[in-house]
Image (cartoon, rainbow, N blue to C red; front, side, top):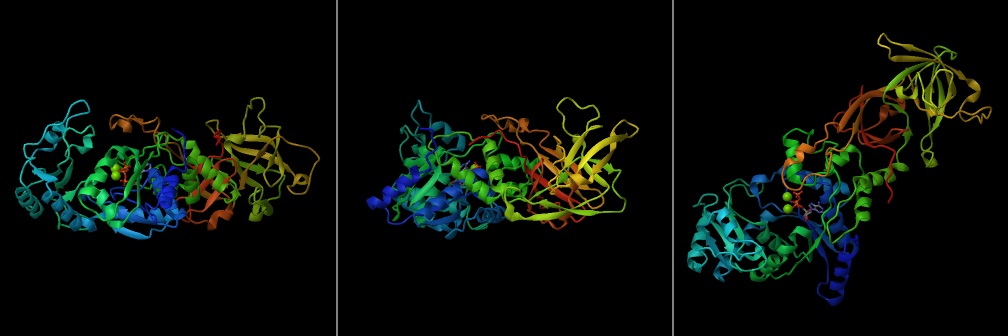
Length: 548
Ligand code: ATP
Ligand code: MG
Ligand code: MG
């Protein structure tokens, strides 16, 4: 069943409360601090926090930090910031590494019960001997070591007597199980590496399949929600809880991970883009990271509404990236003031307008939201319009400026083009127009009609601005099989143009959002803001063929 069922987890929880299986709800969001969060993680965050909230439960933020070589406090801090920015506050903040002592004791318990053994096989030997779906696995020659010998070896692993990869601790389950995860999975490995939290205290580290259920049980998590690829790990999850004799018994539930067209959704690959400088850091506005989306100008509301709309499914699917764009347009439609920006300026001289005069005109801030009021914008003899709003040889049905044609300047007057000036290379660099004072906007002029309305800025007061226009970073759906997604990088994912904006934007701050008439929604970029050149990111253009 591929329909998004926003409530299959709600149904489970409702049932569990009704039957008395649980009397309260605790969920957790368990990121590994080995990268910045992406929009897929946002789906998991929203799901966990909102599910618990609906049942008056709690949600913990738990760092699943059991892999010292890839983890870093920079990631810990960014993850906290991103969860808060999305609008959620955790009930408790935990680090899996704080449970290393407890996990070690549970491993010792397994050894004593004859349920775990130290194995000297190499990683690829273990993999090979575990077999495949069509053949049973082969038992390790170390499988029948005595509990005493295993306890001694495990202790010595902990003390640092062996090198990385020399020995592992494995669960003793069933080498003939049809579920390969149950064929004596590795529980502990040796890694002589400094950990961001525990430093050099440990040189053995628990594997995910052992650590995760224990973490959930220690925290009393009731519903442990993860993505579908862990469905086959659930029997092992339950085995660990049972055999380690945990008092609390959490249960694992799986949902479909979020995939989006033209979007890389893996921390490992996103890190590759950062490390190879394909992008300008984790928060590059083209990145699908939470920090990238934030810098791009996305709002938490848009992301939350998107996540709610896609819902929670039991089968994998790919969501069109246009859907995410739809939700930011929806969110900003009534919130963002509409102003005028000229991205590729062409000078216009109003030859019949007095020199050294600037008049102020009234302009509505958002026609769809009258509460946003109006502002005053300057008008004078020299203006800038968009280069594409003039054509020397216009095709039929072109209603903007050409010699002899009249258009409306938004919020101002009708102007008529009489002449133009070219530079030595033949490029049009200046228009000579006349205006009609009778046609002033807001006066109710009905004398004649024009077909085109164009936007503009007044020349002497306009502010220089840089506009960064983004296209998807990835050209095609990335290939599943190898790491070759770098072959699909869109070379035109960023285009930068220099233009002008209304003077009122002088006081705009980082993250302020605007609709630039005809161009789309923009925000002020965080890391490139300075007083003499505003830098804008285009969040999204206005046009969309997308229908919900
Ligand atoms: P990645 O493969 O990008 O590194 P991960 O699953 O390894 O992701 P974790 O830090 O382990 O990253 O993930 C934390 C939580 O976020 C997990 O519960 C995981 O299931 C969830 N999650 C990760 N990616 C997605 C996704 N694309 N859609 C929904 N949930 C996701
Ligand atoms: Mg993970
Ligand atoms: Mg990962």
